[in-house]
Length: 290
Length: 278
Image (tube, rainbow over all chains, first blue to last red; front, side, top):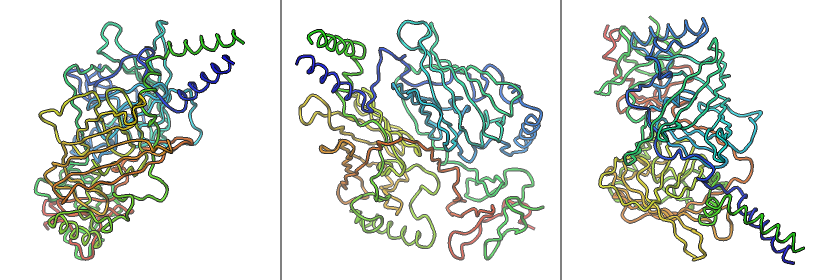
């Protein structure tokens, strides 16, 4: 009788604890709570050990090196090149981990959430043992599966290994427009772990495998925990974005609310759909004609 | 039999020791984690019990009722009225609780997070903090919550939340029912599971705002997704065909040309383009 009661009690409790409920467990998982920022002096380049732009020396294929160089010329002329974020498209992976604005990591047994205060970027890293779905809509942040590892065997996890697939475009590694391949078959592998001597330092070793690259590109990002009282800001790209995209052309809106060119000699947009056109209706699809 | 019983008790004790903190947590907080959706048949209206638009009968002041009526006229003519979402401005509070796309609730001892795949996260601080002296205004606001054990059974069952510190523009719904420009909105919520159905979540939302003649209380209902939970990232800017040039709203057509949204709308002023000055 007692045995039955105990068994029933245990079954009931196990059911209660496993019915979808998740609880944070400090004894098993590392303390990655709080706010993580780029270290002082680190800008928005992808490989933080190298200078931005040309100094990044990304291992691009010849075709994508040419695309990148053309993009740098366009940016030098006032264009946006291959950087899609000027129209408030999210960074996506792996660029999101540049952490332009601070991030928060919430560790739960089945999912680790990475919240980035910029362009509403939310990563869910599933650690429930699932496989990649066979059919899933690609997204900028991708589909991430993680595995907790107890490297030092002390009974507490210390590293989160992540693989991210199912990414959509357009994406670039950083604002200099280093492109990822348009096939969207990027695979991003990460190892996130704390510094062994300083728990307020976090590392993310990011390996990007992409058809635009001649070899996997491995960089290690460093983040520092904010120890002052935390403040979270909303960074709403669309709120004060002066860029206007019409077709394939980028224009600007001036402080006086009038449309203006983003590049020297840029033609105005085609106004053929207006009954009384004030401008030149000369353009071809998405691109004004000269 | 006694041996089996002892084994079960030892196993149970082991379970408790290994995950004591986690289990204590689960015993203390209600199971509101997971994916929550609008119930079938509920649209994007603010008060779920009434249709979207004027039939919401929002208790607006005469000034804001007039603004609402003008906004409706503009929307009928093809404009966006006072609804800021055409510019990909986030819905903010309280509108984000209409949960256009599903939300996830993550409960941690010091913070409850409300995550959606289309706007910024809400952090509801439950660590006992006081209101900061200065709050940087945001669309989502600054939320302080308190867990309540209403029925005294030792487990929390209601999360009371107060949210302040807003910026605008914000509206209650797509029909353009505005909140006051002063950003002094105060929103009080009581979030709890339905007592008879643990897959139904209720959010009683009271909005106190200077655009309203009295507090406006609605109760939102959400349905827990028990099947295969799928999250889709919905980013407004990705396929937004609305374009704002100054205060004027235009559209970009499928073939990439600027086009009017209203009949006889004037084209934008192109004085800054050299070729337009010929």
